[in-house]
Length: 122
Image: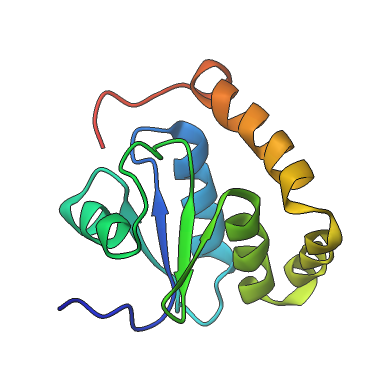
């Protein structure tokens, strides 16, 4: 059985916005503790199944920390918290109800290919 030692981010490997997010995290993760896998990969599919998340969630980032998955805006806010420093201040937005945060997250997610483009492959 695969373990999730340390946090792991599952992201849409065909999405240019997601690719930029991964690059941002790599630059700012001083502890180098966050690992990455695309949702389309075998590892990504395995972890989605392990946590009971449908593979149809390609528009959702999934952040797994301590064997707990965070989705959408909760994932982004927990990533920023884990980056520490000034980025952790954004975690304060967690007080906004999830349905409101995810409403705006879903708008960006639905427009991500149109605004940022899509890769031909992961």
